[in-house]
Image (cartoon, rainbow, N blue to C red):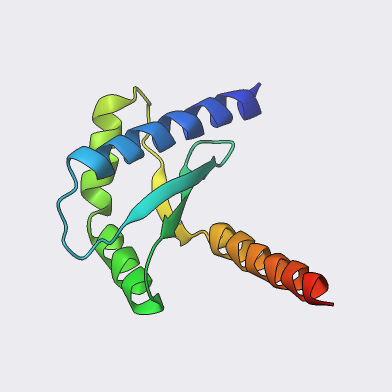
Length: 118
């Protein structure tokens, strides 16, 4: 039962954070990013937010620093939008799965082109 609730809370946090980043977040240090997933612990005390950030490693690091500084604002906004007894602590992580998938796609295409030439 707790896992179902944690999943629903995670999806709602993802939805609300995406909306906040699109409409209200005005920090110029934050590049183009997408919330790719949210994992919430069973007791709803922590939420890991996975982000896909376009840009160099320096831009990704700058985005994480900006999000760490704005963590209080984000928690308060989530608290206003989602009715929870305790708003989870937000932990931001860079999700590299999209870059990894794109790299594999490039490798497969290069192999395919190599086979056509032979």
